[in-house]
Length: 413
Image (cartoon, rainbow, N blue to C red; front, side, top):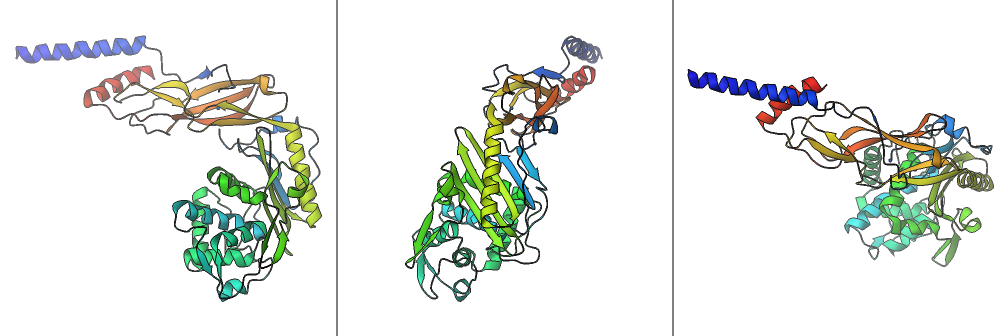
């Protein structure tokens, strides 16, 4: 009996001590905290620049197109646009996804550039833009790839799809699956070429998602989009992207045209440390799509600048964790974080963090713990928000730790 009383008194004493500690400890960081003052080594998400900031940028060109979008490649921020989420017919811009899947299989070794591809009747009979392959001949995989990228060959695209997947239908299933995995919610493919078909559509915003993945994941393959001409079967054809011949900073990407889609162009240019992606859809002519794309790119480079705010893996805060095998977890960003800002406003940026309350273990690396907030001090406006992520795993603690933290957390909250 005496032993039980002693144990009970000890437990009460421990609990009292724990409650005292909880009362003395500051509450978990939950308000806005000052981020590192050195923003040059300092937050990434795909949020657009708010209207307050964009409105300060004068000289947005008048665009005669059904829809368009200008995006900073590194930050993912939308700098100008018209109906970027409107579903449209993509025409040969479809071949960006066809190429993306080809690059995937080249990367895994499923196919090789020196493979010999037998040309089927279906590929040979393709209409529209072609590289003029011959029925029953074997053509090196690399030549077909160049024919699809540089000449926009429908026959080349079909031959590649059939070789990889066995049929166009099987390849298209994979295209749609990949689009869904990328978050391209308003995209659906019916073929590998962009030939007009019911339920074959995408959006300017989804096209940018695909382009960013293509450039990021396959930087060496991307170089093909800058080649100006390609010859096959004694037929020389030029790249249909006129900007390649006008602007040395343009290094891609893809044209498209059908009577129903109009003239379309996805272009990208890099100047110094800034890359822009322009999507122009539904213009009236080949000249128009090139001129409008050039206008958009010039506007973007003239008006905005890109800065890296935080490095991937930089610890921005140590966040209190309850019921874990450790009491704190380092938090930051898992990818380099960039911002696109109107020129001259970078010095007005202030970094801060909003931490979530009551974070319990277990925690996995990449779990969201709060929000990184970048504010324009002069305007008093938030110009960018990005998830604050766990940089390490934290396992669940033992039963005693869970019980003690449960009591402390109650009073801390």
